[in-house]
Figure 1 (cartoon, rainbow, N blue to C red):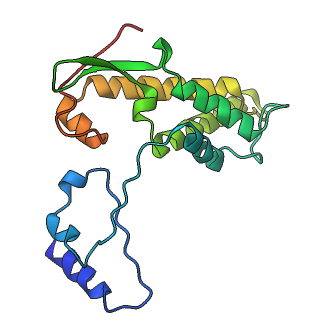
Figure 2 (tube, rainbow, N blue to C red; figure 1 turned 90 degrees about the vertical axis):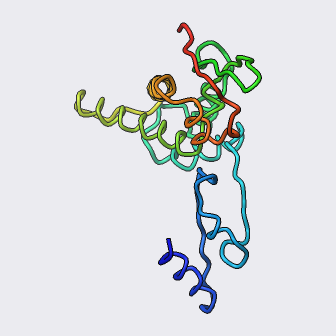
Length: 188
């Protein structure tokens, strides 16, 4: 840490240099890094809402990919985000208990980040490549492949959630400390 702080302090004398730090664990940043004169502007970026999610997906799901005939990347992105952000039993990950003892449903949309959206598109691309190899020809990305990719992400997220320490999980996932005290699975 002392070496990092010395380097950070040395940046002030340089012109046209900007240092940007990013963390999803603000609680673990050494307070010396955040003191005035080091990293002065703090910006909180919340989880994407539906429209922001479409924009993120569109960055990775483009019209130059092999897509199902009659579908464009924008239409597929909207279908994908609608599937992820639905608050139904299909996307109910688990129930979480808060500090007051109240159990609340936790949905895939509640923990979806830009990284997980990219991961879902990457999963769909990988599925298309594997299917292309198996069939010996191009396999287009369509609603079915995207739905499989969402299912895979959902299952992986649910499984990791059920094995997690609730307090640690809530910190890593951007929930205020103490707001998640227990996690329980739901019947699928």
